[in-house]
Image (cartoon, rainbow, N blue to C red):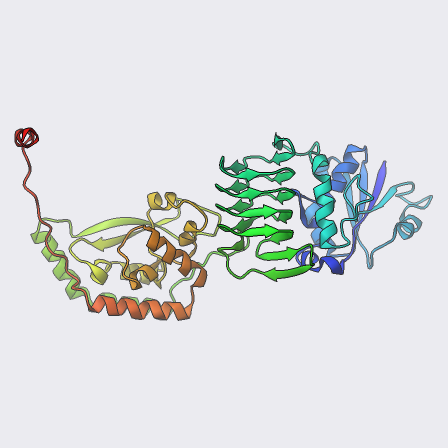
Length: 440
């Protein structure tokens, strides 16, 4: 049994979707439209499938491959225009041709739903998928289960017990739903979606690898990365703030490296301030303290990824405070491990304590010797205030804010004595004395 599939060309009503990828390869319930059709044909006994592709056929061919994963032979043929079923039958399925007698389908609907057009508008795109939910458990899906009547969850989906789910709801693979989130009715969360605490998704589709921030409400819309389309009004907008809505896959890590000028200035500062550093090291030795402390910091990382192995070493002077405590880190700037301005490096154990994607924005900014928290006078370490400053900087990093941070940090450094006073050592208390105090 042979079959011919006609891929639709561009559809102006779905311009935002088709501008990103051919419509047949757009995400759809964890698959794509072409995936679902080839799977349906393979299940029905098809052995060879000819795909007529007008819109970016090379991308269609790269997505499908040779059809081996479905157990069929697939051939992708580029065409100059979108064929009608009659035109395709006359050219490819006539008697005596290699595809004679093949069934021909224009894939403008989901398998088994010819009465529900998929590509007429964003509203039809949503309505067809919502109606197809009960049939979405195809034989090729692994790990999908119906956790409640009308609520399907994919492989390794993490759903907070405090989340409120109202059928019908589709939750894809590796989806994370935070506490007090409201999902449904009629909500579709594609694979690897992250929905933060208190967010709301109703009568909407959230595309794969999309981050939905805290207390964000998505209703009657399609969210794909930072793109938000209201299927009811056909309006669309690119959300500029990744704290609200973001593409976890394509949002790049801000791995800025020091420029040659930045490294040269760091080397000059290292040399000029050597006498002060030597004095602090000598003072620490006189006090019987280790002159410096070794730290292990994580490098900047892409959003949605948390690796505890990409680390580097840096030092701090024990007997100093303020800028002089970080004097050895001038060398890290020279080496390229740090920038002048960025978020302070976190130890792996500190990174593990970051509870959600908003807090983990800390790791997406470049690692710096001076941070926004320093400019605001926050103490070293991880606190709610320092997390807020780090996440803000990760989103708004740029030349203007870097200049402001550097100016304010230098003013603060000039007003604080850089040498730390000697720590008072309390005399050890004998166990007998301690017992006497407890009796008193």
